[in-house]
Length: 193
Ligand SMILES: *[C@@H]1O[C@H](CO)[C@@H](O)[C@H](O)[C@H]1NC(C)=O
Image (cartoon, rainbow, N blue to C red; front, top):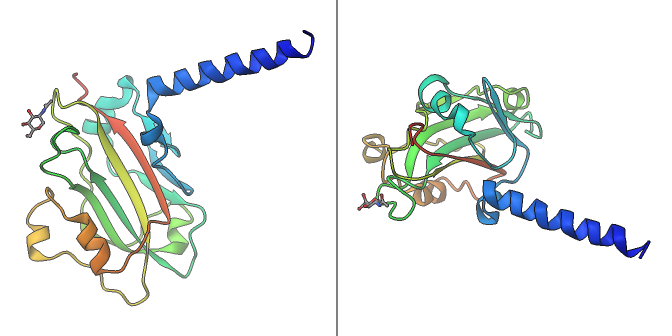
């Protein structure tokens, strides 16, 4: 019994831990994040997949401007592409307007990114997450890619004309961006819901 009790305790702890996680983020949503990307808003430092607490949803939608982005393992001589998209527009069950492009910056200097600064060319300026009311939680995904040397990354006129229905995969493929070196996402819903 003296040996079994602590083991039983650990199992119980494990059960509670899993349950607590499920109340916050599904394992599928939690597993999206990898690499050491950090997205820093004034009152919220995001370094793992999370749901924006209710008390901060208005700020993230209405108040905060583009976050600071920090990638400690950036290579100083490389350049990067940062993408922020909403795959759940207008809602997750029928995302007919996905991907919705919130932010797109190219030619980001690795040396600056390593210090938490975005120095690059903004192809699409940051627009904060404003999920429509009663559309449930939306995922906001940040993906960082290494930009191939000498690649001139741009949007077509058609892509520039709309943030919605962006064929993100075609964009990745046409500039040979490969797999992201780091990814991060947060979920939020309309702050009045
Ligand atoms: C989700 O969006 C679709 C397409 O706009 C709409 O037809 C549907 O009613 C929405 N579903 C919910 C649950 O809001």
